[in-house]
Length: 79
Image (cartoon, rainbow, N blue to C red; front, side, top):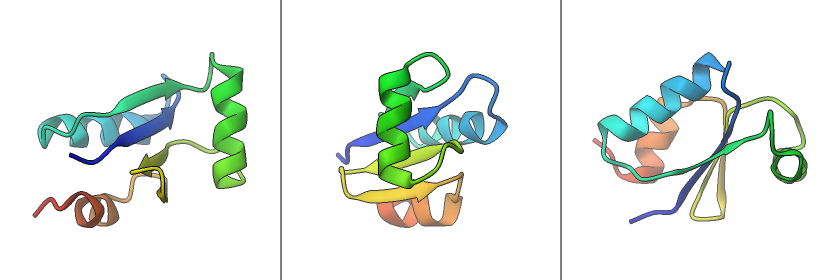
């Protein structure tokens, strides 16, 4: 199983869409609330070069900025 991490905020519509996508495909993920966790916010900024959410990391190497369902499906092997 791939390691999936998502940097998100509670008010982000695309963050909610990404998490629902993961849940609907039984993909386990770790959610970091960057609205509250300043350390994770800085980490996300270092990784992505921006403060926009969601930022999704797969297996600590693939970075997806925003909710790109096609790319996520490809990276996660979801048909």
